[in-house]
Length: 108
Length: 117
Image (cartoon, rainbow over all chains, first blue to last red; front, side, top):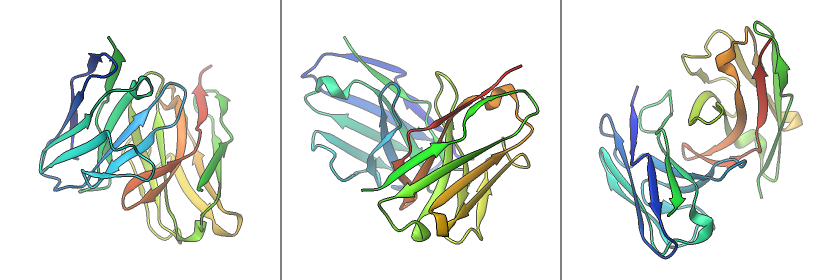
């Protein structure tokens, strides 16, 4: 089973700043990585698949990069609605699909 | 626009059973690969099961294999999860999700299952 590790666990930033979230896979997964955003009391929302392809309707301030074992989700010019928990998920070697433990992006 | 609505959650005693349902709309259900994903209170996401378009291919997470059964009724645009031998650690919000390219593009609002005596 591929283990996904996200860092940091919590990221404290102010609106207008840039956020950089990391996700590491325990073995190479190519570009088979997705990112999700989850707000309290809501289901997760797909942001990015294929490591860097934004899902329909996702603002351009969200971008994904990386391949192999190291991946990054960047959010430029943070908006108030961006403060949430973010998860990465691999789909290179499944079952099982595996998720990272999440990064909480909170307002500083 | 794809829409998924789960139902069937509730409070169950340890060892009990429950059947979750997920009704789909806004897309052609019989061409969709579907999954169940759960989230324990205050915890992260855990994929638990997958079913192919026809139901011929099914996978489970190790944590639920032998106790959970996924199924679908394409005529009724519905996905199901039969959960048996419930344990306290099965307490979670259960989401149905539609896969697109192996990522989960659409999610239901979730159904809360609480296992407690």
